[in-house]
Length: 146
Ligand code: HEM
Picture 1: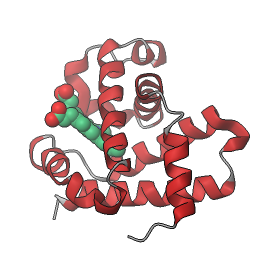
Picture 2 (picture 1 turned 90 degrees about the vertical axis):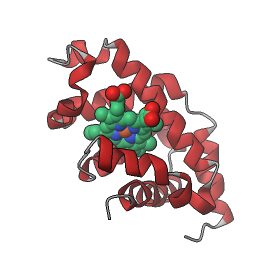
Picture 3 (picture 1 turned 120 degrees about the horizontal axis):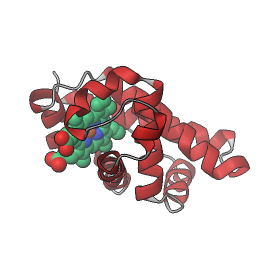
């Protein structure tokens, strides 16, 4: 993947504003509410029966932070995302059995969380760079399935 200097700047400057705990919680909550079938992977998390339960669930919060911390790690390795996420991809494929279509969904809700957080600073160019990054992220996480 080739990144222009502008794309890298768009990705890292947005990331500098991210709060992995709060924004991770928001993104995972959205995933579980908007795509309720994703709840099946988190049966050990307890009550996910409605929006209030999901957004108040401490395990959802802790896990959202973990997921966004991993996204931050990928941003620190933009030139080598596939290799950086190889083990995580393998564990989602072989141990967690997550349908890789769900990576796209998480990417989509993350973009929405960032857009609503940044407002007008999330310009079309910034969104374009993020969509490209999400594509690279999803491809890297899906790589261990093949
Ligand atoms: C675990 C990252 C997408 C389901 C994890 C862990 C990380 C992570 C860092 C912890 C792994 C460990 O402790 O060894 C990510 C990233 C994603 C992503 C970066 C996409 C951007 C998804 C999706 C699902 C999912 C879409 C399901 C819909 C799980 C489950 C666990 C897990 C069930 C184990 C949770 C537990 O029992 O603690 N993920 N994940 N992940 N992930 Fe993902």
